[in-house]
Image (cartoon, rainbow, N blue to C red; front, side, top):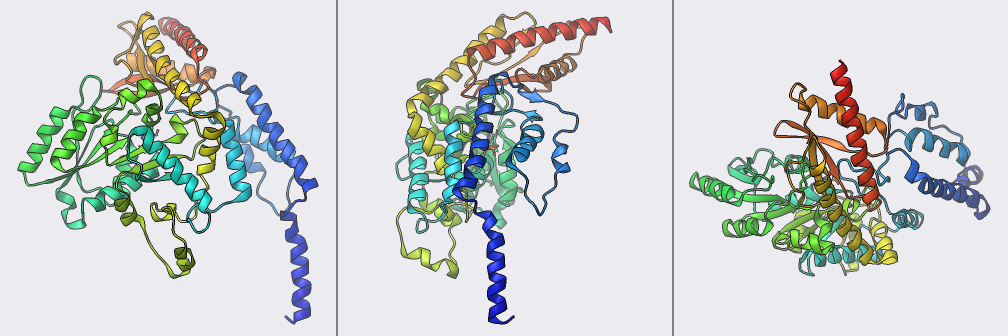
Length: 490
Ligand SMILES: Cc1ncc(COP(=O)(O)O)c(C=O)c1O
C-alpha cells in the first residue's frame, strides 16, 4: 500500500473507531439512563423478590447476539433487567440470607465506575503509585483491625478463593515443602473447612499431602486436644506436620475455631498457621466480634472477604501475610519488558505478591465507601448482625417444632423443623427450604450436618434488619404448617 492509500485507509478507520469515543452530548443520555436504572433498582429493592425462577433462566439474552451494529441503551438495559437482574438470587436484597451474603454498597458501585473510567493500573507502583498506595493502605487498615503488625503485606484479590491460594503458596514455600517431601507432609483442618482451601491445595501442587480432619467439639469447632494428639502421632511416625488451617467463621454453622489455643499448638510444632476468616474476619470491627476472634492476630496468614463482611460487591477478597518477605519470595518475577518499572520504588506492588499482573483497581470500591461513610457505620452494622443472630436463635428456640442444634458464634443460625415421627425429617426440611425459596420474600440455603438436612440463616447483608428476620420466621412457620397439612392429606 503506498503512503497515500495508507493515509486514506487510516483516516477511514479512525472515523469508524471514533464511534468508541462518544462525545459529552452522546454520553449524557446514556449515563442518565444507566443511573436511572440503578436508582429504580434501589428504590424497588425492598419489594423485589429475593429469588425468581423464570422458565428460561435468562436464556432470552441469547436471542440478542453480539453483533456488528450497536443497540440503543434502553434496549440493552431492558435485556439486563429481564434476563440478568430478574432470574436467580438477588444478592443486593436484605432478604438474602443464604450462603454468605454481603449486599452491595452503592458507593462501591460509584468507585467501580470511576475505576473503570480512569482505568488506573493498580498492579505496579511505577504505573499508578496512588492506586497501589490505596490498596496497601487498605491492607494495613485491615491488618490493624485484626491486630496484625503494620508491616503486614497482602493483596486485594477477586475473592476468598484466590486469597487462600496466595496464602497457601506462601506457606508452602516458607515451610520448604518441595515435591520430594509432599507425601510425608501433613496438613490439619476440620471437615467444615471451606472447600476453596482443598481447591487451593490442589492447585498449589499440595493435593498429595496428607490431610487430617481434626475432630470438632459439639459446637463444630476444632478440638485442640485432638489436634495435639494427632500432631504427636504424626511426628512419632516420622511425618512432617507443616500447616494448620483454622476457620474464623465456618460456612456451615459460622463456628470460630479456638484461635488462641490453636496458635499455641502451631507455634509449639513449627506449623504455618492460616486462618480462613473470609466470612468472619470483618467482625473484628465490632466490639463483640473482636472478642470472638481473639487469637487471629497470632496467625501467619489470614483471608478476609470485603465482599462479605464489608458489604462490597462481589469481586473483593483480601489476604494478609505477616512476613512480607515470604509473600514476595513466592510471587515476585521480573521480565525485560518490565524494566522501566524497576526504576521507581516505593510500596510493594500488587503484581509482586499475587498471581495477577494486570488487575482491576479493586481498592477504589473499598476505599470510597469507607471514606464517605466512615468506619463507625460498619462497626454498628456488624454488631447489629451478631445481635440479629442471637435474636433469631432465641426466637427459633421458642417456636414449636423447630430445633436449633448450636448457638451461633457469629451470624449463621442453623436449624431444622422436626416433623411428627411418621414424616422423614430430611425430606420435610428439603420441602421447607424449597417452599421458602419459591415464595421469594426471603432467601435461605441449606446444608447437611452429620447427615441431617439443615436450613441456615446467614445474616450478613447490611440491608438485613430485625423486620427481615421477623418476616423470615413468619414465612417458615407458615410453610411448615402448609407442608405438614399436605403431608397429612397425602
Ligand atoms: C469460610 C469461607 N471461606 C472461603 C470462602 C470462599 O470465598 P470466595 O467465594 O470469595 O472465593 C467462603 C465463601 O463463601 C467462605 O464462606
